[in-house]
Amino acid sequence: MAAAMTVIIAFLNMTGVIRPTANSVFDIPFLSKLADPGEIFDPEGYTNMVPSIAQAIITVAMNFAFRSVAKYTAELENHKT
Image 1 (tube, rainbow, N blue to C red):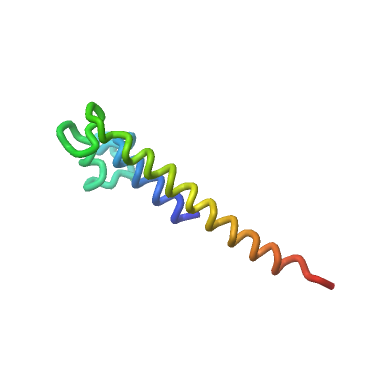
Image 2 (cartoon, rainbow, N blue to C red):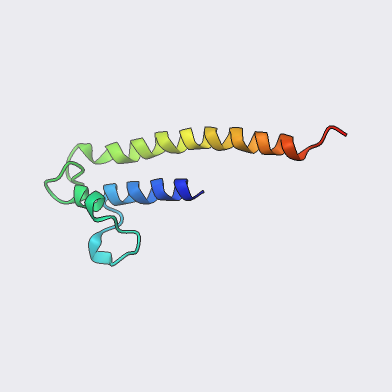
């Protein structure tokens, strides 16, 4: 769960949702700087959707990993006898 939250916070910084001016504990300055005007993920540019698409792909991948862990732990819990 901590890994999923860290990934979401990182992508929110890259898309400019979490900004340094908000004095947030979740602000990661070197990532939120990427969403500044003129930077690679500038909200006015064409590459601003890259972090959102990457977040969706990584979330799906983490969901598959969690599903296999959940199945494994459920099998351990459900005894045969």
